[in-house]
Amino acid sequence: MSGINWASVRALAPSRADYAGLRASWRGDLLAGVTDGIVALPLALAFGVSSGAGAEAGLVTAIVAGLVAAVFGGSSVQVSGPTGAMVVVLAPIVSSHGVGAIAIVTVMAGGIVLLAGVLRLGRTVSYIPWPVIEGFTVGIGIIIFLQQVPSAVGVSGSGHSSNAVIAAIESVAEASWPQALLPIGIVVATGAIMGVLTRLNPRVPSSFVAIAVVTAVAVVSHLPLASIGALPHTLPSPAIPDLSVHNLSTLAAPAFTIAALAAIESLLSARVAASISDTGAYNADRELVGQGLASLASGFFGGMPATGAIARTAVNVRSGAKTRLSAIVHALALLAVVYLVADVVSRVPLATLSGVLMITAARMVSPSMVKRVLHSTRAAAFVFVLTAIITVSFDLITAVGIGIVVAAFFSLRALSKASGVRRQEIEGAAVPGDERIAVFRMQGALFFGAAERVVERVTEHHGIEVVVLRLSHLQIIDATGAHTLAELVTVLEQHGVTVLIKGVRPEHRALLDRLGVMSALRDPKHLFDNLPDAVAHAREHIARLAARQGVPPYVEDASDS
Image (cartoon, rainbow, N blue to C red; front, top):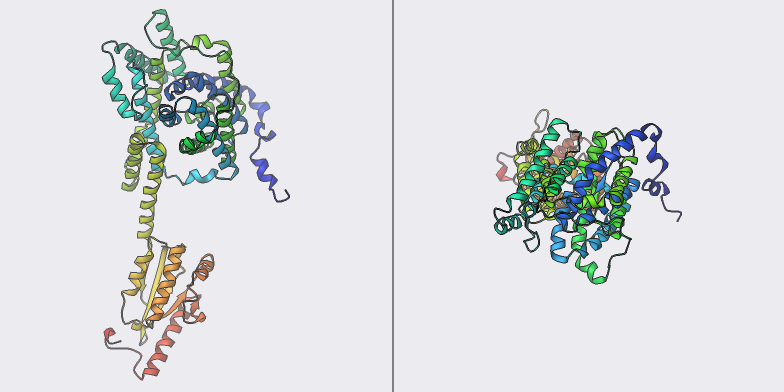
């Protein structure tokens, strides 16, 4: 137990410091929390319905997970709950394994995210390239929009393809016309109200107002529209899902997918929150711990996986939130809805929820951001488009994985082009025999993508008896590069070419030693700290060779040597 770093453990746990300044900010936190609860209500209901788990599951997730993440998370102003990105992943799981699988994968994914936080993996999200993030954001927006098409034309989403594009086409073909014009009109009306209100006053919770107005008109007019249906008047009792060996093995892949998405989206949202607020930096590892616990709690209450929600977090910050009390109040405000107005909420038409999500999806696709990516570099544009297409065609995690691999390929390619080896002239007055000495300057990075090119560049020169390798400008060298360098020295020495190495950087010395670069040299003294000493030694070597051979220290034609 003595080896435990208790400071690190405490950094992952709640503390009184989380509420520093609360005496001065509590009024603003309360107002921000209530505002965010109003904004979150329609989205929680809509995401629950769209995922196939039901409106109740979305509401439970926003309450339970929102409260737990607020207390245990690593951001002071992050708001968590069900999100559109998670719906994209959950809908195919419900289609394949049934609604009962949601609670199981939620608990499994929560455990994985919690473990990632304990293992300090919070900073790994910084390795995801910007074009990949923007690509899957656009793809998610397209999928969320297409997932609303069945409700928008008054068709049940069950029995359709798990692919959103195909399901949307099937729904339009299956719809009853002209009866489908009624739910379409509800969607249009909802979107129009949201658009007008947002333009007039962005601070107004446009989705909440739109749902209230459209629901009132639908109820008064007795319009034949499918509604959310009965909601519970209390939170469901907690229960442990069926975590049998069969379920754990069957749902392992979806659980890891959900966990990866939850970690990525939560950390991105926390990073955005830190950039737009003055509440200080966030703790990435604690954020994962908090989101993991939030999903665990949500699963026990029959909810969905939770993540940080960028849009609701931004509303929270703009509303004046300073501490995590605002996110706690947001969850409590939604809890009040369950206990006080569940009957009213149950009468909300599904079509108006589809309208809310369609507008939300459209706002996820920023034309200015798309233009910025497409006009950056050809590599970035390709990665962006590829990630978006794969997200829509297959799934999010596949898209992110392929996007990262392709982006890494382009990065390594660019790094390889910027790296290399160049022969340089020996400075100062020429000395007879200098034509038998080749000084090569290695620069940039010597890694698996550039190593073979370096070998070709050095060995293409003939008539050389001494090679000086300048390594002081080599910024990066990996195991493959060091191994290739050792092979290069060995091959040159075997062909009678003496190799001198100049300027080994201290951070590279251990790796070069381990992989045999130094031992491949003919003499340990063939390591130099400066170029003049290395050149002087090379010239002495050429002079000694010439003396032994009884010929001048130069040749008329390099091919004769």
